[in-house]
Image (spheres, rainbow, N blue to C red):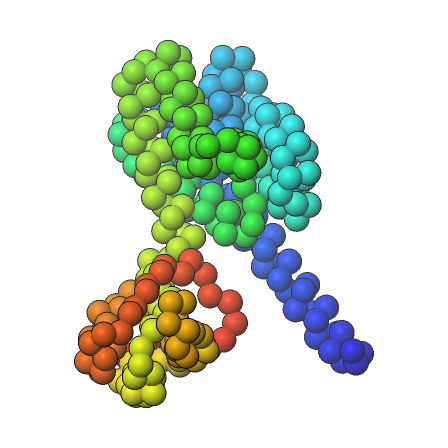
Length: 293
C-alpha cells in the first residue's frame, strides 16, 4: 500500500471517530435535557439502568449520575467488553460519563413543565432523540440491553422479550415508589422514547432493499433504471428445485418508491418473485432520492 493511500485511510478513520464521538457528545446533552428538565422533576422514569438510577437517586438523595455510572460499570466489563467488543464498551462508557456530567449541569435548572403527562410526552421525545443518536453512534446507556443480548444466546427468550420483562419490573417498582399514576406516565414515556429511538435509527424516510427473481431480468432492469432512476445489481443464481439458472436483481429504493417498483416489475413479468426488506442504514454507493415518474 502506497504512503498516499495510508494517509487517506488514516484521515478517513480519524474523521469517522470524530463524527462518532461528536454524535455521542450531542446525544448525551439532548438526553440529559429530556431527563433533568422533564422526566426526573415529575417523577417520571425511563426503563433500564436509567430508570433504576433515577429511583435510587430519589431514595438516597445522591446524584442520578453517580448511580448511572456505578450500575453500568459491571455490565460494561462483564458483557460489553468481554461479550460484545471493546469498541462498544468504550463508546458506551464515554456516553454514560457524558450523560452523568451533563445531568449534573442541568440538575439545578427548573423544570419546563409540572404536568406529568406533558413531561412524559416531550421528555420522552427529547430523551429518545438523544439516546437514538448515541445508539446510532455505536454506544448505549443501558446495561440491561447487554444482559438481554447475552441471555438471548443462552436462553429461549429474545432480546426484546428480556428487555421488556426487565423494564416492566422496573416500571412496576416506580409505582411502589412514586404512585401508580406516575408509573403509568412512566410507561407512556417509555413507549415514546422507544418510538423516538426507532425514528432516529431508521430515519423518517426509510429505505428498502428489494430482491427480484424474474425470467425477464433485462426488461425489468432497464425499466427500473429508466423509470425509477435506480441502479440495479444482477446476482447470478440457480433454482433450488430445478437447478435452472436464475438472474436475481437487487436494488435499494425509498418507501415512496416501493409501490412504483412493484408496478414496474409486475408489468414486465407478472410471475416475478419480489422480496422487500427494510434497510436501517446505507453506507457508500451513490444512493440518492429520485423523483418518481
